[in-house]
Image: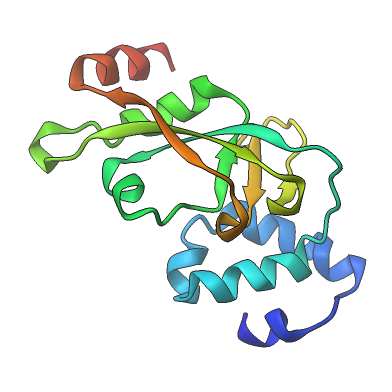
Length: 152
């Protein structure tokens, strides 16, 4: 990824070949090791141009929000974000799930996934270093977690 991040561009075929890798490799940021390198590589592999910003949501752990180190995958669907937050609301792990909201400017948006049957989560891939203000909009407690997970 370090070498990809240094390239000015790659072919459309490489971009198309990378998309399934992104979808299937949910731990890619951990494997790359440098979030900045991955963000720069994604700018080459997902070179999209969007004219409008988007209101996005992310379901995650409270630790992510307190450290201000945000992930790449967000969603336009708050219900999907709640589902992800529910996975973090586990008392015996001493963890709290949260739903975050951000207004992503066009320059932060790398990919808006088209609706599909496979992993249809309304995913929007962003460069987290270019996000605007991120706000905590909901805390997920154990009771809410059970209710949300039963609905899915």
